[in-house]
Length: 339
Image (cartoon, rainbow, N blue to C red; front, side, top):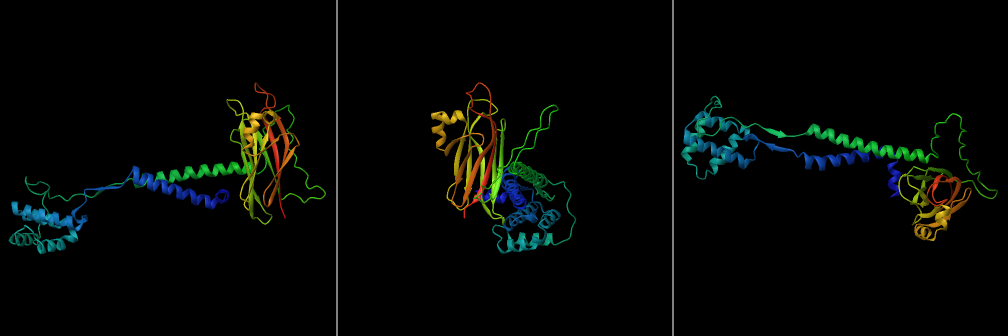
């Protein structure tokens, strides 16, 4: 699943997927379901061979009843290039048709004549050739397919665009209000310690109350560009009711492509950490740890080590218990590759 998400971050692959998805939806759902192509009023020349024989037999019966050679010639000519072959098949297997009538009909249709007018004597076969039509909405279908493909593609591109902006490490600073102090951006941890190596990657995840869809994720790549895994932070639990959501716990996770499972820890507010009911509920998602400014925890997989450090945090104020939900949180994720 994570490998698929990685592929979809590539514009070329994403474009191909969007095109194929739109084509499939347009072809099957619309082309075969909503606006199916239907044929009607096909000309005798376009019919199958057995139906062409039926047409010719009816023309012969009509000629037998009316003796109208011009009308017989017109109906014979409606079969186009297939007329001679159809007559040969009827002669080879005349059925109930008198052979003498066949001979007379063949003589009548072999004499050049003018096509009869649209006025037909009652009881005779119509002499105006049926018109070929097709109830087709090809142009509309093309526009619908293109529209679906475009909307789907723009939606996916917009999603990944905002995800990448989050992954870039920070939220755009709000416009400065005159008379207020400029907000100080969070500082990166100065790794390494004297006996450690520098982290392979560092990411900054920033949450602010009102971001109800908060879910930051980051791709972990080696210095050579090889995909190693992913890490991220998302909302785990809320408290109270109403909007915006009151987040009382976050999930910090680490995925290693060389490991069989994703490691998860739950970053909890002071209230959630001290409440036995909430804590027991969240322990099923991962090992709990309390959010404290400057505090940190470690997540380890088969080949990766992640240190999550709380750079800055603040609790919301309101009717809910004190220190029960976050107003803001800035979390630094530092990654090392195990040797």
